[in-house]
Amino acid sequence: MPTLNPRPRAGLDRVPAPALFVVSGLTLYLGAAVAVGLFDRLGAPTVSWWRIVLAAVVLLAWRRPWRRAWTRRSLGVAALFGVVLAAMNVAFYVGIDHLPLGVGVAIEFVGPVAVAAVTGRGWRERLAIVVAASGVLLLAGVTLSSGLPREDVIVGLGALLAAAACWAGYIVLGKRVARAGAGSGIDGLAVGMAAGALAFAPFFGSSTAEVVGDPGLLAFLLVVAVCSSVVPYVLDQVVLRRVGTATFAVLLALLPATAVVVGAVVLRQLPTWPELVGLLLVSGAIAMTARS
Image (tube, rainbow, N blue to C red; front, side, top):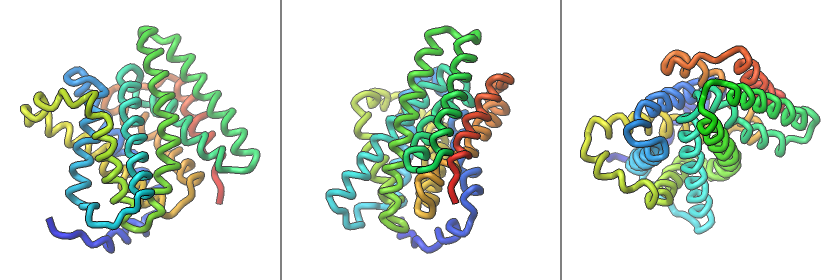
């Protein structure tokens, strides 16, 4: 494969960050919607692992990060970033296997709100935690009182809160990876995804024979990997080079609405009015942490 010159990516640097996030969100949740259709076949955690594996293969083939000089520290940060990223994806897929996509995304946003609040210094950041918590509690209460089995609700909420914690780590570690400079952030992403895939291989690697033996299934998983990992996470690295962690977390406020739209159109998961209020509270909390 010919060496890809990093200069063309300068075009992405001229695109407004909100526009990049719209593209990122659409591809991310369209990929998640496709993944939901595979849960009955492989199980949510296994689908998530294959998403990481195939994304790692694509990124490694594209970037060939072994050509770059790595320090032990930078390699360790990239690997830790990838393990946290993989854990976030596994937990999130378990969550949306039990709860609607839009609700799941809103609850997971506790992580970015926490990052924005911790890295901020004003009263807005502190109040944002209260507003976000109110939204999450409302969503949790609505979900508990819904017709979903109680076991599904408990597993889903627990998995999504775990994903939220991992998402906070993803933002913090991702910023350190992105600071390495143009191009090297994506190299770090490639290394990280490979590390995440290897870390979870003992748990989900037994599905290899089934997936490799079914080209159709493998093709669907590749779509999930490209849409939900390669495109959005590469765009994340582009944006993280340009903004701080608090601003990055604020831009993520665009994603809950995107998830609701994709869930409604693709999965026919129409939110109730109380759920919409909860979603607005969470998005509002993220917007409150905005800093110039």
